[in-house]
Amino acid sequence: METSGGIAGGGIQASLGGRYALALFELAQDAKAIDTVEASLTTVRDALAQSDDFRTLTTSPMVGRGPAVKAVLATADQLGIDATTKSFLGVLAENRRLAQLPAIIRAFRKLASRYRGEVSAEVTSAHPLDESQISELKQQLRTRVGREVSVDLSVDPALLGGLVVRIGSQMIDSSIRTRLNALASAMKG
Image (cartoon, rainbow, N blue to C red; front, side, top):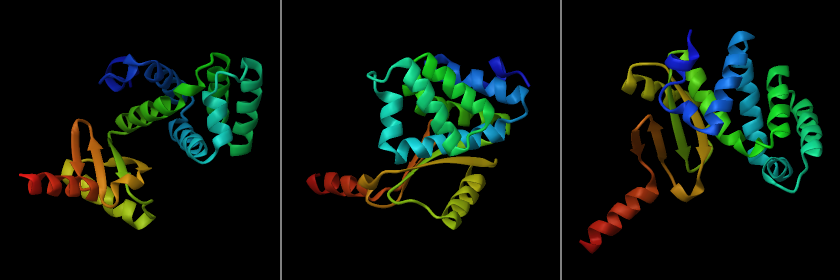
């Protein structure tokens, strides 16, 4: 399947993170390891969210190139990251592009979803969702869009409750924060 036109369309390759994601996707596709690399990137994303030290390593301009490469490769070993993704992280560190990781991970997930014929949905919830809630959400989204849906989950306590779902340019906002804001506007009316 051609990646430069078919899969990578839709503006993914326009950004620096998108170009890196496309390069990694092509490597993963050649190695028949798209799912493995995607799982490793999810592990990296979770580590970025949970570890202040790892986040600082990827974003601080004070960390030199050599130490950054050594630290990111050691972290990749600790996290059990596959060889393709580990090598890619080393290249990012060498090129001083580790700060692009969140954008690269998002773009890679979109590429992988398109490759599998899925629609990708970004879901933000007020609290972490359990497996049964995720399964139910995927089923409801599948019914709504008529295709398999992969979900990229994040948590934002400021929503207070409910969900915000983005599928392409469509947004479904059932958050309590939005409902309260609408109520406040109606009362000012």
